[in-house]
Image 1 (cartoon, rainbow, N blue to C red):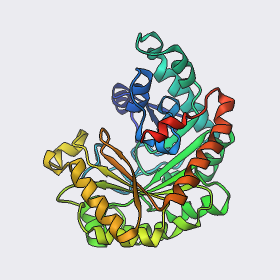
Image 2: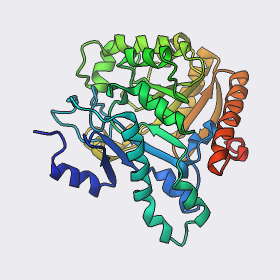
Image 3: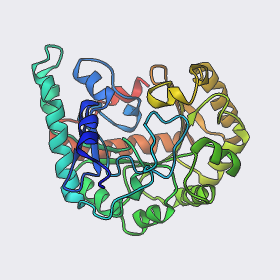
Image 4: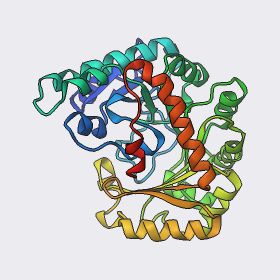
Length: 343
């Protein structure tokens, strides 16, 4: 039986997803910040990396394929969560399909009186791809080809991984296919807690994640980001342990994101598990004390704190945005540096 039956496809479509490609393993959904910008609202906190949300495609090539079933995840889990496909679409087919799906999903904004025509026209020419919507993207076997296909079209590629497929990260480095940003999500500071937090299907997830973290400093062009989803009374503890991992990985940036009581996670966790911004700030201060990383951005709405290794790294990132702009300008818009300065 195929993983995505007609009934399941209808359910995803009703939820705002589009499942695309001939083999139906790629998903696209309009991000809340894309909608916000098109309606005259604020941009995503990723503005610090040069993102303009109305031109960003939020997608995954591995919809509902993941070796983890994290307690804080808002998705629905089932017995086939770690089941993957034997047939995969090509990178070109995926990129063509996600752009078409994005344009289709945005079509309704054309008649919205709050949407500026200029922004809507820009949105139909996406320049960013966030490979982060659902599942573990590095389970897609040709991630090298996918990153190269995205970047060959003058688009940025932000890849979010749980670090359980370090051989895929090695391929990106060895085959000159580094994304614009590579995020490794880290959920605990030891093997025992990793099992509790992630409900992993793997016997050696902790060892795999550590191997991936050690690869971070081998990326020469991508921004490297150590990412944490903080859940009170679950994994928001042991800042010294997280600091040891950060000092080992030496990422350019560290992100702390407060857990949100949404979706299916409401059946697994309580609203009290959501940390306040002040609690996140205190945890970030503790990490700063042990690592020397500087708090550079605090987003109150998303409850995200972004830390950078040092001021020199921050300046390097700003120059990287300027380089992105030279490519993006050909698609009729550059990033307004005020968006970054305001953070």
